Image 1 (cartoon, rainbow, N blue to C red):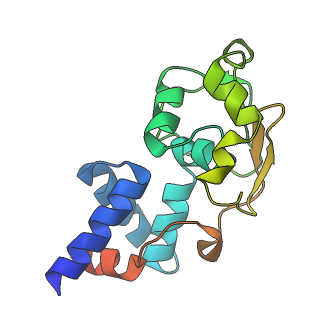
Image 2 (image 1 turned 90 degrees about the horizontal axis):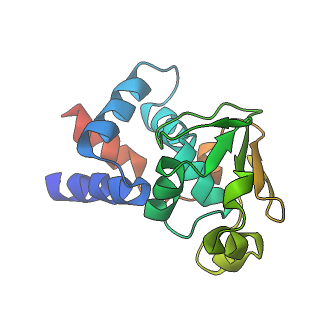
Length: 160
């Protein structure tokens, strides 16, 4: 049913804060990857910098995570990255800029205040909240990604 597939697609878009164009690009990339299209799509979306900033507990919402990245508060391997769509590779370290660590939102994050609204830290992230650092230890596996969506419906929506 079209309505069900559309709703699932919109749910996925909302959870990652993506535009239609960005989600379609993730689908296209997933179709050209070996294995299940939906699994590849979710794994790709989960390695976005804004998603990992949220999963690490540095931000309370997707929008806040995106804003932290765009406002140049986040470093990847010591380099400033201001693109929320930046794909983090396994082994790379995400951290809050030293200058930004004194800001109230990051002090709250270091105290673990956001843990009440966020799911537990996934197994593919090694997080040290006190120093506001996180490392992507490996590629995310689909069963560990804390996203409420039936990815098969999303794939069927775009395959039509």
